[in-house]
Length: 96
Image 1: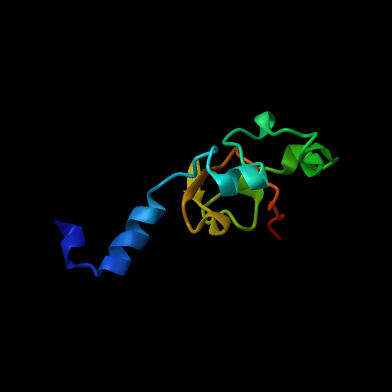
Image 2 (image 1 turned 180 degrees about the vertical axis):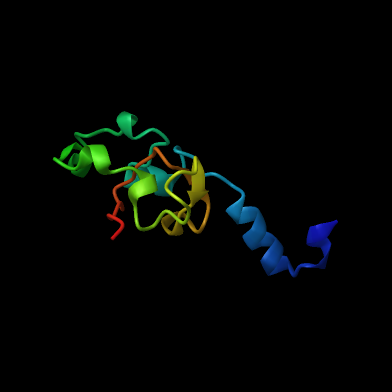
């Protein structure tokens, strides 16, 4: 097995990167994360309802560690676990 030669820390990091963020976990809920940005509660997260809301997607966020064309990529806010490119959370920051 390929992972057998990795240290326990490396195996944990590798497993972590292959996981997706669960919308129901506390960190995701506190940030209003949704896999589909259209499902964000804009009353609770008015940042998503602003003039730039249509552009605010994970794929356009500086924290999305992947090409904007990919469906899922790691996010530094969620310890490298994957988020949907068409998702959103309140930590959204525009890519420069």
